[in-house]
Image (cartoon, rainbow, N blue to C red):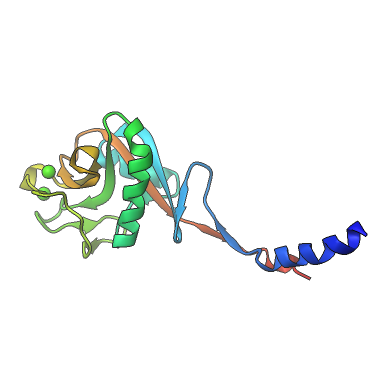
Length: 163
Ligand SMILES: [Ca+2]
Ligand SMILES: [Ca+2]
């Protein structure tokens, strides 16, 4: 009796077996995995650190992605002291021309905090800070703070098990 009931349930489960995965400690959103790194680093050091883990400093290219990271920081960022995180944006090459380092593309979507960016050539790297409501701020690249790495999620295709 038990075996007869179990077989069809198992078949239904396996039909939807394909899914995407993030490594331990990463949070998944769409096709990316995000990790807040509890290590102080300059912007350049943070770039190297993320790459060593097969990721990049996070790029927030759309409002949807920005809102996800905003929510992640509202939930978890307050336990970091000071609550400030580097992202992958900068205007190092040309002042006021903000670019995402990973893709070398100019910002299209932005979510600057009121009055930011405000310090021209003195602040060339992008941070998210609780002080400005987790919105965007230009900051001095040589300052050390926490950071967020992003990497593509890996698709696991378990479809072959069906059958
Ligand atoms: Ca600047
Ligand atoms: Ca600023």
